[in-house]
Image 1 (tube, rainbow, N blue to C red):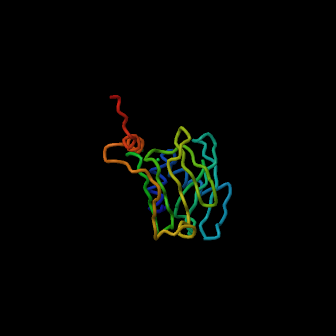
Image 2 (spheres, rainbow, N blue to C red):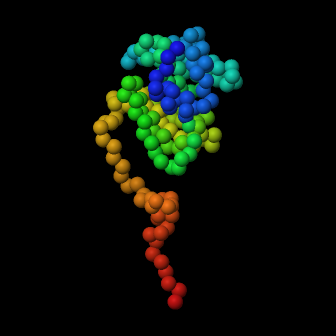
Image 3 (tube, rainbow, N blue to C red):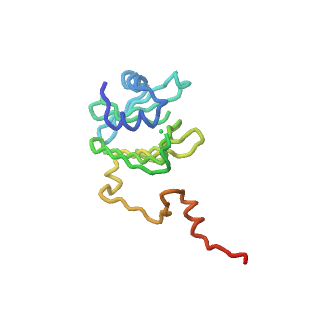
Length: 165
């Protein structure tokens, strides 16, 4: 069974608790199957290796190329990274380079990856170009961070100094 580049680079990397063999098993023998309006196919199944938790796997319209999964990732600093995959119109916003242990579906085609403490590590958006203008990226009101410190350090360094003499 084939997979998309998005699945290889984002899903498996950010969700190391997901095994490709589980996704293949669910697509081959789903508990439930549903075609999305865009032609992609959703498959649901249970994963005994995860204590019987449900796993949803989404394929491209061909019904065999695994694109993503949902429900049942390592920190280089606090850099927000955007990964766009035009072949599947998927956008992944990485907040922390740390594995997730759970995923919450927070809206249609939008999933939030959480670490073991429940903190967000990434946001997964399917059909990104339909709900976002991907031609423009704008950041406003972000704290200035110097090359040697955090935003908190930068803020502290701007405080006025007081004299005791």
